[in-house]
Image 1 (spheres, rainbow, N blue to C red):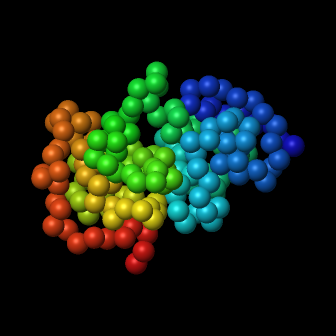
Image 2 (tube, one colour):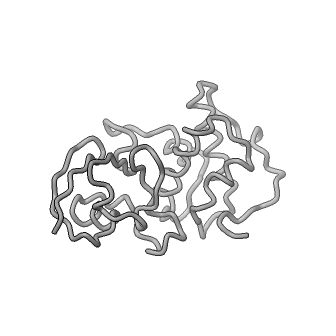
Length: 176
């Protein structure tokens, strides 16, 4: 066993973990952060995306011991005090989800994208979330949700669906 100290969603934890424990399993099984979803265990789907020290990572590819001394934000900690983060709100308002399985990872990847690019184009949104797969949607509403959240976060208010480029050809994110 190896002892780690990690701050998750604003709370510091000191725990013993097996050195081979994946961060996703530590978050779910030891801390109860079940919003971080296990999708594929192969890093292909992105459902397990969290922020580690401010950067989006697929938590199925990170060992818990690698997070020692770090700060992790999960979907549960994205918006403190029970509110919704603008990206969460936009996903709801713009119907950016269907079954919801990919949604936590998609939202975490989108927040990371908007931190780097606060005004992404349709293509930039698609490229920014390309490591996260959704098997239910055609991604149009996800793109709309990210762009609406971008507008809100910039203080520009809501972006109507008509303002989003709906003429772009469908693009399946994560496939060549």
